[in-house]
Amino acid sequence: PILIVSHNPIELQLLCKEVVVLERGQAVSQGSPMEVFTQANIYPGIATAFENILELDLMEQSSEQTIAYLIEAKSTSQTIALPPIPDSKKKDTKHPIRIGIAASDLLIARTPPVDISARNIIACRIERIKRLPSACLVIVKLHDAAQTELAAELTAIAVQELELAPKMQVYIVFKTNAARIY
Image 1 (cartoon, helix red, strand yellow):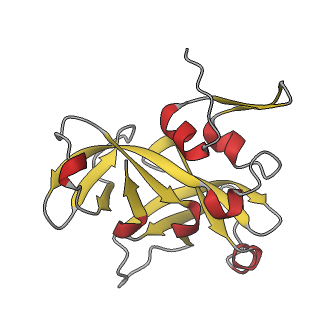
Image 2 (cartoon, helix red, strand yellow; image 1 turned 180 degrees about the vertical axis):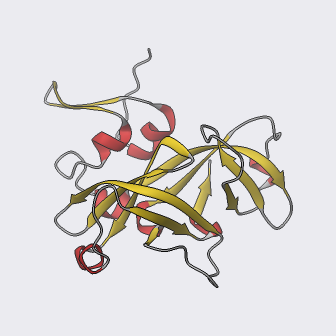
Image 3 (spheres, rainbow, N blue to C red; image 1 turned 90 degrees about the horizontal axis):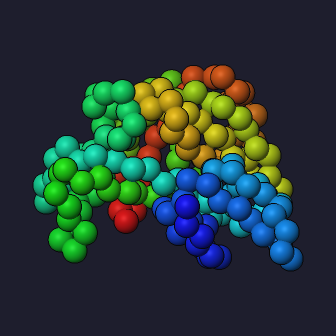
């Protein structure tokens, strides 16, 4: 174990599997970054600042795009399209990379979208919906990587109109350029 002190939730998501939030010397929350940083009382900026962190293995790189898959995925059939990796961050395909995708950059569809420019369409199941003062966070688990959770920021009206509910099968959609490579 190592102790890291930080006020930057994205930094902690990149470095830690478990976090503890202290307030006036007392632990007020503890758990995975997803559990802790999606609590509005712990992280008031959640509706506008939460970033999903994924660890990926590279499959191929070109000057136009990078193709990768989730490390904990059961297969490589569900790939993720990313922007080209800059030379300063290029890695050997044997080493994993981490990416961040803002919760506000994720879309949810009830059926697989067709004829769409977004390259990433991932089958998921809704785990829970967190209602925040200014938005809703829809927490999903990926079918091919059961331990991977993503948070998508939606308006309450979108959640209502799509009739989203826990255990529902949905699709997360995001553009290639929505991913930040760390």
